[in-house]
Length: 369
Image (cartoon, one colour):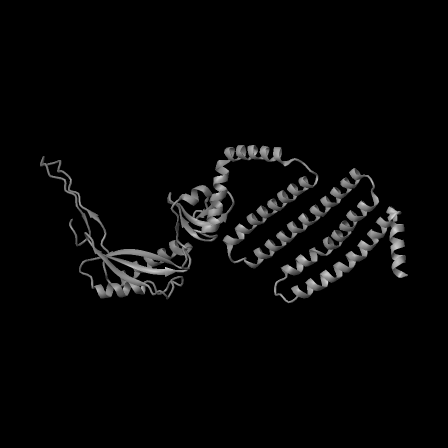
């Protein structure tokens, strides 16, 4: 008896398409509330067990779209039940499918931006990765938009062959006209992937400029010299040039100071005084320990080199200044001579008419004169 009543009710509803459509929409709203309740409860229970907050934000973004999707799916069914004309029914279905496509394309874009924003905050210490993430975020957004536009045209039965052909011609023309821009773009991508330098590194360009990397962009790299001069170099040039990275993989930099002492100096005393010259400089690292090396026999002096490590390449000039000052003071206090070039010139006599030869020599106190 109950089965016969259901069959009769359904047959009556089939004869009343508007009532059937409204009933389907009401049922869809109730089903959307139920689906959202179950969906949210289940996913929130799962994401609550994770330590990150990204999945919680993405689940919160899916709250409304899930309800709207259930209602739009029921609207498609209701449109088939209510609308008798095939053409109007097709238009209504395509419109509803288009709304679904736009809805979930927007959901995907928002989820992508949420993910990359959290990743940037999580990887704040790694500056090179931080520079690359906005580029990846924009590329994914473009891909999602193009994907959505492609399926939107497909839903409305738009012939894509002429559009693809035109897009190919336009792409070739744009690529030809902007080959330098594309070269800089792919140069920037190679820098992000290969990472020959990072933000904050001190590098020396092939042309000799030295400075700190302050920005790695999509098109160019910017270097701030010690004279506060900002140098902008295209990434295509940076990707193909020889770059000396003073920061390197080891977080320290070696400073070298060269000095000459007289040939009759006590070498043990010289080396001891050179090491003492490094003791009062706080920027010099204790490990590796500073050292002194006897490099060569010069024309007028014994050439020594003082080697010390500092933490930051930016301190090189100031530390070298302190080392040279201390060396001069320590050697002077110990009575160790630092030879310097001298030149002796004998002038031709003018009163007695003698013609003397002009002699010139160069050397230290103990060298030729």
